[in-house]
Image (tube, rainbow, N blue to C red; front, side, top):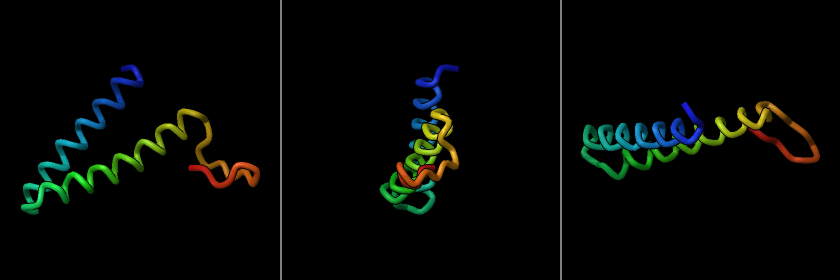
Length: 65
């Protein structure tokens, strides 16, 4: 699976999961907001891991994921 396909599939999956969770809580916007927050954390971690910067704490570049 290519990187773009993985990103798109995770994004769509989290959006669908957010809508479902929103329907359970009877507030779709809350579900979408939660999905967006989770997606942002996943995306930052994925890009950091892909760039081989996971866990790097370099004082010249600040703290990175």
